[in-house]
Amino acid sequence: MCTLNFLYIVAIMILLQLDNDMFVEVQVYQFILAVNAANIIPQGHCLLHDSERLNWISMQLRKLYKSPPVCPQISKRYSYWTQYWTYLLHYLFFNMAQNYVSVATTPLVGEIDSFYYFLDTVISADSVWIDKLPGKILRTVATSIFCYHWLFVGSTMFLWTFSTIFLISDILSALEKQPFENRLGYNCVRILVAVTNSATRWIMATGFCVVSIIFFVALDISVKFCGKIPHMVYFTFVIVSILMIVVAGMIVSFSARVLDRSGRYVKKWGRRVAMVTNVCAFRRRYWIRVWKAVSPVGLEMGCFGKVDKMSILCLGEVWVDYTIAILLF
Image (cartoon, rainbow, N blue to C red; front, side, top):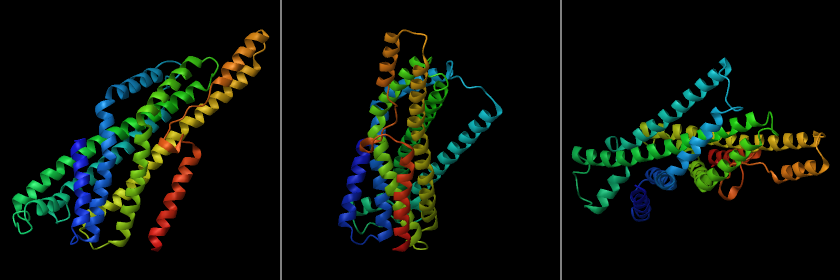
């Protein structure tokens, strides 16, 4: 499917260059689909070739999460938060599925799907069966195959990323209560974070670039093409623009917690080492050197570096600036 996605992107780019009769809103719609397919390619490649490493990371994090001193106490507050995040993830998944269902059924409501232009260009410009029921069924089936692949890959990577970030932040929160005694657990977290960064560093960077592009384009269409495109397609763009805000906010905010809690762990460990007085001077200097060699860990995002508290503000600033520019122009 990665090869088919690449061919799909190339075909759309060729159509956008050759087909001068295509409406502007249709061109923008095809561009969004091409950008989405470009985002799915590295994610699908990661799931195909790094699935064992991703499973190993998840298994090791769950072992740490269920072992003392991390093992959470099941309280009412913990149960409420678990239910809240479960409902929110279900809501995001069903909204994502609804968007892809809308994309898959566009051949039934209009001539804006990619395969209509593929068939019209390849077969004949005078073919009438493309607009008839057999042609619509063929276009719907072809579009549904791609949409199912996009939904499966996108939702799998999002759920894996979110659960991994959530587990790492919770483990660090439990370890910082007794930093000196939990050195082994912190070293395990450092290794798992390093492996996670090596597997998903560029996928996260590509994902956020694509999310930003889709948000800007979807917002621009929602504002400028109201009433000019089918209602189902229009509401798809509105939902997509809102969905991109929620997804980006969740990933960035939880990723920033990892670096923040890791930094607090290192600081508390340093205070604990400074308070140790019942050991010889040589032993104390040894622990001080060990502490200085420990650095906070954080999730990396390509060339943007580690995600910290300021990342959500920087992302929000860029999105607000472009949103104002879209609304004004």
